[in-house]
Length: 233
Image (tube, rainbow, N blue to C red):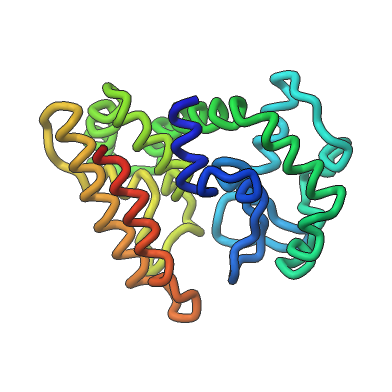
């Protein structure tokens, strides 16, 4: 729950209103403390969709789903555009969705922890044979401490595992795999967290440099770097 609250602060400013958002320039809603992606019907993009998976997870854990998420309705976002989403912000559906998200904060945090646990085998399968030993070593350095666990959980939620070919600009990814490949040191857990923060900074700066100009990703970099700074503390 401590990690969940920190991620809620990172993604939503710790506010209830921030649990339901749709960022300018995106074609998907971002929901919950982890800003889980939810695409409307017919829309797809390079980023992995996670909200339907989260809904299935909490249903398996016994959470009561609101009507708008029952019977497979969680597979597509009911709002087709950001304009439509913002118009509905004070409507009954949105209020119900927000209440569901408030009531499942603990399960959202648990979902994020499980995603981090599942990340290592995915990354090892995607990494080159020459890099697999290093990736496992750096992951284990981080997971050995609470600050390292927070950094791993937050970053894999924030920028993904780095295993999808679609999540690349000029064939260079920005996920957890690419950050671990950027690391090289031994050293204790504290040194690992600081090295991880340095590596994420380099990887995210490279993403901004390689991004299509029309996405104007430089506008997000200061916020990303502030988030990375929280790993050091």
